[in-house]
Length: 241
Image (cartoon, helix red, strand yellow):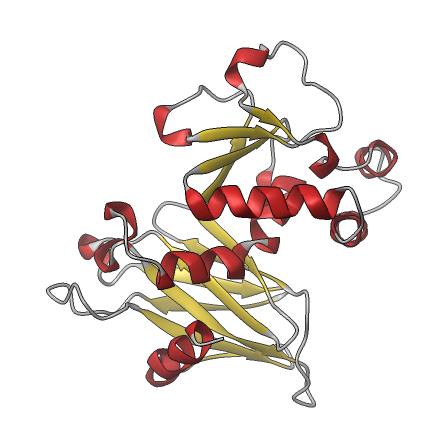
């Protein structure tokens, strides 16, 4: 499991392994509160300064950072983080105040499908049992039906404002596992892919703790459509990859 938070937030037992992803050590932070420093996953200083100065916008910052993750030594560091998150709880830390415009959210999105597969396919720990998760998946395609790779998505619980990011793979598929329990039946979720979005309702049978809960939301040419009847078959296909 991988979560993110600001390094200046109070450490918590629920954090698990605390991993700092900054090029420079943050001021005022003692080394004892960080378990591992993966500086190669930090945003490049030149890009970060350009973004903060307004010389580049978030879309360009995001593009540069994701491109950097494919090069060494960042690629190896990301692989190490992926392995850790598959084995247990990991919290990625940096100093940005706005997580939606921060590279730690891009790390979580980059690992989203891999970690979702690990959560859904592995024997469930208590916090990952069926009754504690609701999966939103689907495809993002252009107006001609061509899959769009690398599109960032977000599922937001409208009740709490808590967001879960994701990103499409080469086939245009995204898989986002949210934290919803039995009492969340009927809660509204906002699914967003770029400027397109769709408000949906969490629908499931609260007494059924065996069947996976979730829905499918597709984005085609900027239009969104929910197709819950296709959820089970799409999830099965995803897990069989």
